[in-house]
Image 1 (cartoon, helix red, strand yellow):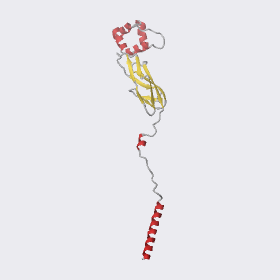
Image 2: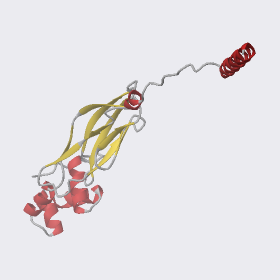
Image 3: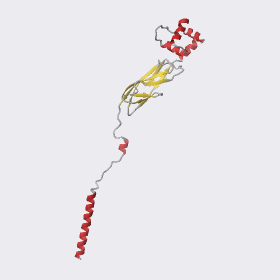
Image 4: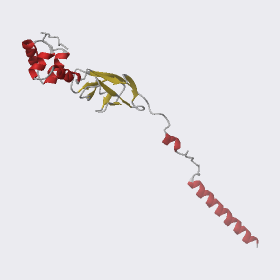
Length: 195
């Protein structure tokens, strides 16, 4: 596989990837290619490895990251999280680790394992970036909707109704009791006088 040599100031992805695998700067890689040719054979010769070994090194570098699900909706109160997964290809990639980031942490955050948590209503693009090839990324668009807690929670529904009994005015009760005592005493006096 021959690499295209560009004299442009910004390196191509392929140049960056090969330089990274070889532990070189892009400038050094371009210098090697300019002096020895534009093929993997020249690069492999420079490092004393075979072109086949160089191809294996290149094949072990990720070329794609796919994130699933590609879109998801979560809420601020219910369904607050969604688990994302990143698939790094090719399958022969030596290091399939990714770094997760949120484009809008005010709407949704993401942890190191790809678990997205709602923060506030809005949209956030969650990105999984290859740890060995920072230009290789995959994304998922997360929409966060403001949700309300259900009214009448289970705790509220479980409480028994409180019945308030009107027990009457305490003074009224005392007056009635006093009236009863007076009535009984008066009746007693009348009975004793009749005898």
